[in-house]
Image: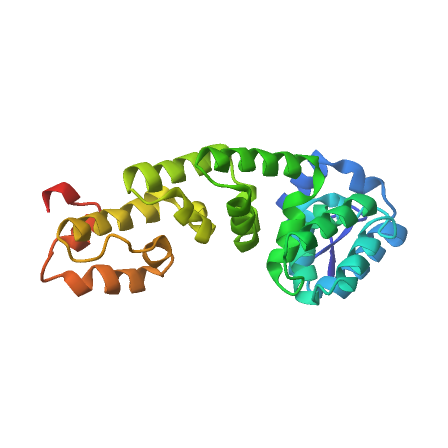
Length: 275
């Protein structure tokens, strides 16, 4: 559904606020130079056939206004057809177009090379990780970030196979900043004593908040270790991935008789060294 914005001859999908549209047009007024009938509306109609909701179209637009400006027959349509050809389901195509449309607007030749590279890495086209991996490799900027992440992980003893294994599990682990990787690895390896290759099996933990999630939970684990209440070889994903309620049940409530201050440790009201 479309609404008219003030006196400006420009229609936008519902879900786009006036303030956001104003900021977008101020930063990239090119949209105002395009024909409403010949460019903007046809682009919207085409995107609607794939994304099927205004909310998703707005999300794509917020990522890049060029989704409404570029000739779709040049790159977008051929790239979409390629994904379908290799077996990527509609849900995954929609995911990529909604959140990372710039990947699908890459030149068809380069996009094809990236898709083939991802296939050779062993990704399953039926899973969302396939399109996320394609996104991680698309464009010079993303490729540069990928290579930098590769170098950072090798500093922690990861081999090529380790890095590719982590990439297959969570493709965007190759899009993290060097600072984010280093802070996480330093804490897990040097503060907690976990082997660096433990993270290979669950790279998603590198995305978690160190201050809000990782440190509070690990303080509880340190207390339980010191009292011999749990084994030292407990896995990172067992500690960090469960929702808070499940974590508290398994590691706090369960041991409240042996360590009654665990909840206070978790809430960082008590120093774990004094428990």
